[in-house]
Amino acid sequence: MNKFTILFLTLLLALPVAMKAESAKEKRDDTRYLTGAVPEVDGKVVFSKEFQIPGMSQAQIYDTIMKWMQERLKENKNIESRVVFSDEAKGTVAGIGEEWIVFSSSALSLDRTLINYQITVTCKPGNCLVELEKIRFTYRETEKYKAEEWITDKYALNKTKTKLVRGLAKWRRKTVDFADDIFMDVAVAFGAPDTRPKAEKKKKEEEKTTPSIVAAAGPIIIGNTDKKTDIKVTTTEPANTVPAATLTPATPVGKASSDMPGYVEIDLKQIPGEVYALMGSGKLVISIGKDEFNMINMTANAGGALGYQSGKAVAYCTLSPDQSYDAIEKADNYTLKLYAPNQTTPSAVIECKKLPSQTTPQAGQPRTYVGEIVKLLMKK
Image (cartoon, rainbow, N blue to C red; front, top):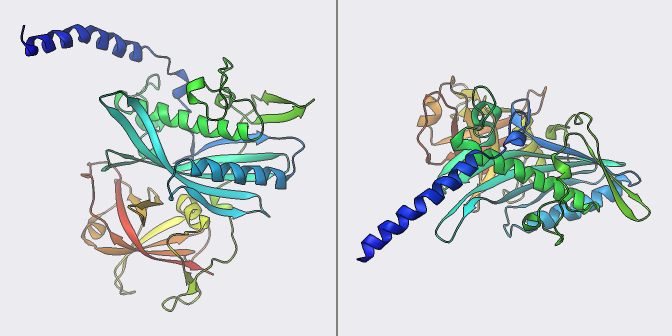
């Protein structure tokens, strides 16, 4: 037999094995990934978990969280992953991360996506609240998706909410697992045992059969009894999340703007956490044109986000399917204005240079525009 015949027979013999493996995947139990697995707050994907640590002061919890977050984000070996805001007096720490989620890996192929996220921790005496939000994916370098448009119940579940949609199943599963992994890291930082399977552990080598404590609803209570860590998982309803927009840092550091009195120009390498927070819960207005009396203004109804591409700060803004997009399609430059709740003047002004679109807009779907940030101004 020639080599082509041998190759054909090899593939033919391998086909039943591959079909059997695929069949096994289809029969997997996806119960934990169904309705409610990807929580939403005011239309935004926000994973959250409350940790109760009786006997620890706010300062002790803050110090533990600050050390953990710095080390956790440093693991990515990526300068874009870092702590971007901290307020010891209020017990708040916020960071942004960028790392890989691997769907599958073999000697011949690697299927993975880059995930960007914001993590915010609010510390109080005896407890802390961890929130994971602003989740975005970059797949194959050019495909970009927001969690709200990709892994929510609306898109990733079938009409009866009983199965995952085939094309989006891996994204939803891996993102839920990613959030659980973050929460387990926090629990371990406070002295809880690591109950993850051996292959997923970061700080323990022993394999345990105990189910993951972070998958349960309600807060995780971590206490110390006779020098042994006692963990109790409650079944009460999750605590209400604290919107990131409530963060109020000190007056931003930067040089005063000559164009806009009362505003300071911010270093784009050190964007304050308040700006990230406003992107999630404030009002985002797109202004096109320089003439105040002939300017086109529109609200980015589907929200926005901040990030970095090739080392440059960028801003994302998304129009809902029913909005007119002609003006921004034609514009080369535009300005984003971020308004805090109940405010009539912008808390931040972001001047952008529109970047070429990497994807073809789909009819009836939100349209996301990416702009390189040229200048960032914040209200004093």
